[in-house]
Image (cartoon, rainbow, N blue to C red; front, side, top):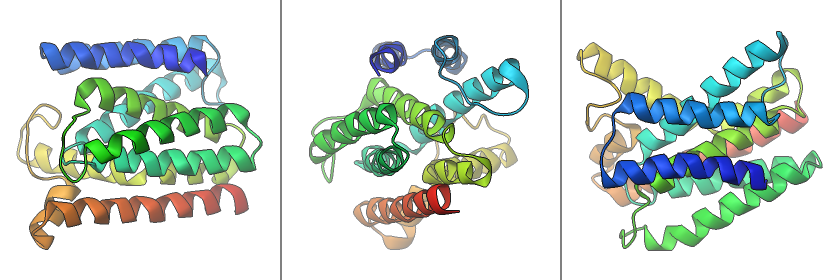
Length: 230
């Protein structure tokens, strides 16, 4: 776990620098890819058919994708921290039920961090995550996804993926919408996220965030069921 936290520190440093002096998206992606490669080099990677090379590529892509999907969703007070806490709790349960001490310990650290931060960020933001906090949180959740997937087999691995399905769906929606508008989906700001749509429909950001938490909780419970009892 110390190794994972150390590598996530690289991602946090990239985010901290970006908070101080904005860097290009390509630079951030490259830094995240390097951090992911360090995890692979240290033996933390998906164990799928196709050999080490294919597993390394899929692992790096997975980590970078998860890191940025939740970062894109961090657009309202408490949203990312709440979703992170729910996902970490789900991974902790999976770790306990599969007797994986590493997953259980890392997930409990992430869960505790999110719960400790949340009262200062929701409903009013007295403290903000910034890119330093959000990118490192998402990188750790991506690592938990990989560590949780390996003890599982076949369709059971889908359960671990479903835990983080809301950020994935939101990213697909945003990318598709912005590509149709012929703008850069990753650097162009907009109010086309699921949370923004809910806020307009419910006339309340507070309600939008709590609904997103509820959806994430349902996804987490479904993921646990599919992963462990399918």
